[in-house]
Image (tube, rainbow, N blue to C red):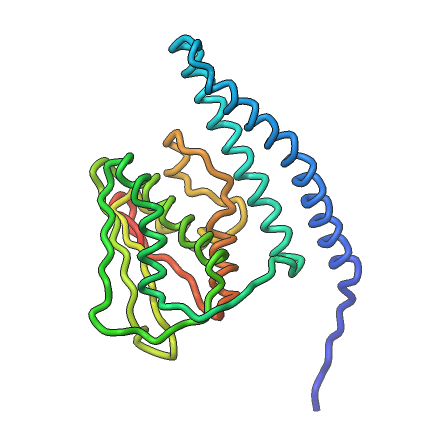
Length: 236
């Protein structure tokens, strides 16, 4: 014999949909004025007559506006993902070459932070993979940005890609020499809005949505994403 249990989730699903619609609506309404504010601040920054003090204030305000815009865009992406509206366009690509392109865009930020960025290219040729170049670059750029921002002075980052030990997969890794993640918190790393306790000691802004979005993108590619870390020693 068997027993079947049926639970009515109508109200639960309706509440989740209402929440996503609210977040999407508010984010859309915030994005337009924030974009206009950002453009206006950039236009003011072109004024050569600003005093050094006012120029510094303006630069800080522009950075704050950019942080707000990033947070709003992250909220919109989370809403699209949870409603199944994110949209993917897969194409065949050489993952090693693709990673090289992504690293090229991250190199200036790494140099400004005095962080060495290495690419350990595979010695063997790798089979092509199906990827959405735009979406996957969003995930990889977030991982690289974290590795740079949460690194130590004169730290380093090593990116590798190889055939996985099991299954028809390629495995890419980003290893840094940063502040690491407390062992008791690593299980929450990919949760929405989570930020590790040791990060909060630094003056580093973030929404806590980047890794959640990155993991969902990787899973939409049929892959898996995980992290290994040792506090004060770095993360992979």
